[in-house]
Structure formats: structure tokens, C-alpha cells
Image 1 (cartoon, rainbow, N blue to C red):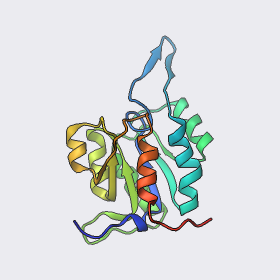
Image 2: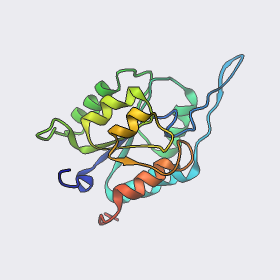
Image 3: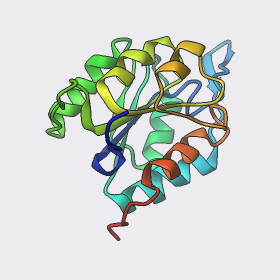
Image 4: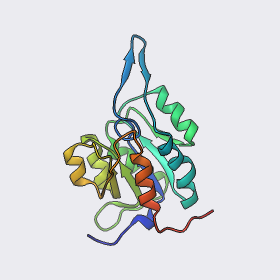
Length: 171
């Protein structure tokens, strides 16, 4: 493996269902009713990432008012919903934040965390990638870091702590 590129990360892009949540969908007669988020993940996004100059973004294939609300609470401004071509989402974020690909074509400044097959193209585009412990087998093979925690149960916080380990805080 090449050099550790964690120090270069300025953006953490996250999948939602199965990563920020446990992947279960509660749907009632009126549509989606609830999703469960872990407050430790939220603390990592809202309180830890900014100290290291890292912003968070969400890329999800589904569309949900619940996700909009959670992202608003966490201060996540880049929320790409109903985005089945998640790699296009990564490219759009890379352009917006002037991230350039390295020799291997992956963006050194972007980390990605996801749990299922739609996430693999994003993982290919980012120099650092992770997945929850309960991710699909193919995703685990692709990830640079496989969490001990499962989706919606602190995996995002675990990855954030791993990502910033050894870095100097900006605040």
C-alpha cells in the first residue's frame, strides 16, 4: 500500500442507509416514518470533523425529509439525495471543492464511507474509504478501513476517529 493519505482529507462523504443508520426502513401508510441515527456519529460529524478542517457531505440513493432534517441538525450543507450514480456525486463535490485526482485517479482530499454495492464506485474515486462491520462482502474487500461497529451503531464515529488520529487539530 502507498502512503497514508489521511492527512490530505478535507471532505468526508457518507452514505446514509446502512452507514449513518442501521439500514432498516420504517414505512407507514403515509410513507417513510423514521430512521435511527446514532448520536455518537452525529457528534463526530458536528464536533470532531470541523476541528480538523474536514467538512461532511451525504450522498444517498433515496430521498427523505428525515435525512434533510438530520443533516440540517449536523450542519451538513452538501446533501445529495435521490442520487443512484453516487460516483457522479463524488465528482460534483470534487469540482465544487477543487479537489484534484492523484496519479491513480482517486481524490486525495476525499474520504468515503458506505455499506453496499452502489458505494463501490465512490470508494474507487476516493483515496480513503471505509465501511461498517455489517457491509456487503464486496464493499469490505474494497475498503481501506473496515469498522468494528455496524451501520447506525457508531461506525461513522469510529471511522472519523481513525481518520483524524495523529492529525493536529485546527482549533
